[in-house]
Length: 390
Image 1 (cartoon, rainbow, N blue to C red):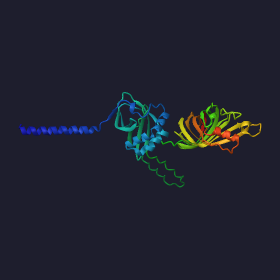
Image 2 (cartoon, rainbow, N blue to C red):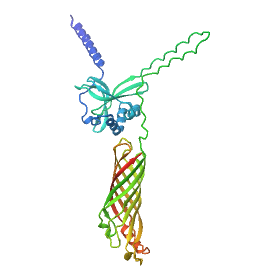
Image 3 (tube, rainbow, N blue to C red):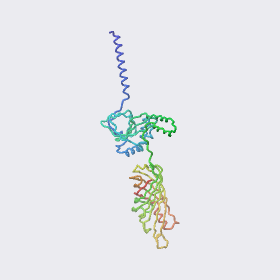
Image 4 (cartoon, helix red, strand yellow):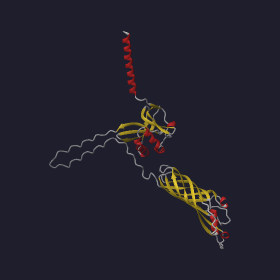
């Protein structure tokens, strides 16, 4: 065989082998990402032992789950997926080894991302919650592994449509025909996923009310006697109207024996505070059992004192009762803890301050004494009580 013919034969064989290799590589498709272990630093949550744990994870990661669906090109499904995870029907499934997933969500340094074309190659199967949503003629099947909470898309399939049978023909006429039979019911079209359950009524509550007891501490004021105060029992109440995460409340605190060392008084005075506050709460859903909050506002601080006759200079032998009010403000915070939907506890720490005032020589001596004791009065109050929400 001539040298030229051998060279041509080698080129033909090489070209054929290369074409066969390219065809085989193309047939294999994109390379899969093999996942052997779930959890770790890329997980969305700690292991979930119940549907309640799953719904709590979803409430914590609503924005991240929406971001994951947008990254996967399924942003239009965000509302359906979140509603189904929060209120809808879920089923328990077991995902076997060698199962293919279209994609799996992960968190890298707290930032959501997805890994496409995933195959589970772990030695054992894993438990998951499964649900489906239907959109634009397609049924999407998702799973959420119980061990990590990483939302995954199992498949996207066209929604089948069942054929509508033709109605049965009417019977031939007769001399005394009976009423024609009703046509058979028309079959419903398609296999639809479970309907998304609506939000339960009263999911968001609007009112809070609390009765509480406590004590004041760390008191101070302009008058020297106000710096040597020991705490004593206080009590009061609170009612609030919430509008989502923000609302307004009215707080009334009463200290029937506010201990002040003063020779001008026959007994310790009563100091009360009435405040109208803006209140902010972390979460107003009934299923959130512990709810931190903050509040603050303005109102009045009031002192009721019994001034001795020698100080009041009234010429009487009886004590003089004086009510004195000062503009004031308060700020504080605490938490609500509910075991059920309506009744729980409220813990609160709050700072109160009355404004300063100048001595008015035109006031009666008893009023001047009470005004001096109340001017610039500051104190903390700690309370705990029974709370109601509806």
